[in-house]
Image 1 (cartoon, one colour):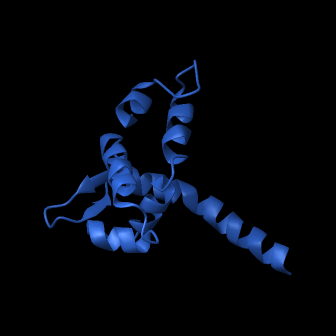
Image 2 (image 1 turned 90 degrees about the vertical axis):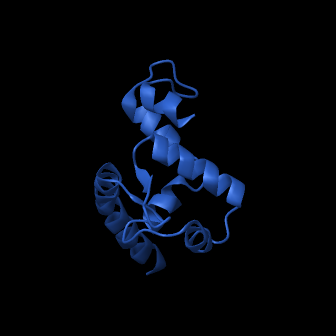
Length: 110
């Protein structure tokens, strides 16, 4: 699936625009959470599952496979999953949105 999305074929889109392929991949259950949990350091499959609130192992492995195929996640020599340079760049791209969400949350609770 991720290969299809990364190469331009996008579910629900006839244009195949890269931004649509990226949003499709990131919109899949647990994709963003996996990237977020890996932002600071690599994690083993078990540690990642724990960090993701005990997500289904089947779904977690499917998302890891998709994120690896898309070039955002890699399996390290020690068996842990970590972000690739492209994955780190993607996470940095989301940091302004994260900061905005924190401000938004604080204003809603005030």
